[in-house]
Image (cartoon, protein in one colour):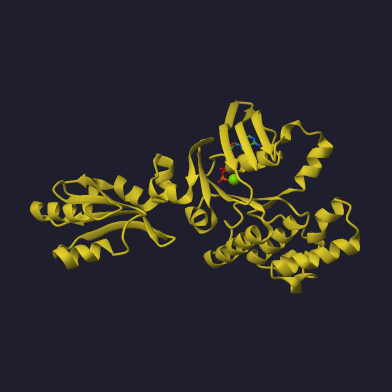
Length: 337
Ligand SMILES: Nc1ncnc2c1ncn2[C@@H]1O[C@H](COP(=O)(O)OP(=O)(O)OP(=O)(O)O)[C@@H](O)[C@H]1O
Ligand SMILES: [Mg+2]
């Protein structure tokens, strides 16, 4: 289990102090896939670098399996670090070494004999689906293949924790999906705890159980992914969960004052029937969808839509009444009603 207790990190700069992290309290259970999401500059990389003490916290504690990491001697810390490995957006492979030798590298550092290291490296290359690339150099691989090699290398020392800092941010959507599937498989098969740092809600949605939202160095919300999707409370969470709904809502100047515009939010318990279509079929009322950012999470609908209702007030009110009577749907008046 990873426990961050009142973790803080301040960088002292010539022109003042940068408070990158302030009083972070998080518990990441063993075997979880835990997401840490936030906009650029929120402090995500600093946080993940504090977990393995690549960055020394200036306050608080990083407790892993009951041991406060910052109290360890350099030798013990080096040993513990083999249990907490990391992959990056830019893969960080050694370009002058073959893939096999890249995977062998952490074992060399740990003093594993060459033959044994190569045997294990081949097993890992099998696991990530690239045994045929053993003798290829990183420059000869695609981005997705490089990340697979980086994952194999990260697993070489049998870690308990895999930290992924924007590991799929340089990849296209299909490759992202295949890498996330591999990470999920590794989590399930090997029971490795995974911490996923990302700025993309879609990544959290695809593989994480729980998520913390980081904004300006502070955790503003944390909970199960479903809870946060269903009921984002803070502006930072709303921005991440429904970015389009948010931006459309800010640009209301384009509506006439007597337009009836409502924001409909789905909180995950809504029925499967499509709201706009059923409003048309059951009540004969047609509405325009101005923006929609909804998603299906384990068969339940989350997110929000901005709808323009008919101009006639009585009909608009009837439409609102109908939508409000549906379970798992909240309707908020934006303008005109
Ligand atoms: N070594 C450093 N020295 C000084 N300031 C730093 C250092 N590393 C990070 N910072 C500052 O700390 C804050 C958080 O940076 P961090 O890299 O953790 O953000 P991030 O959430 O990972 O952003 P991104 O999504 O762009 O990678 C920023 O204001 C950054 O300028
Ligand atoms: Mg970063």
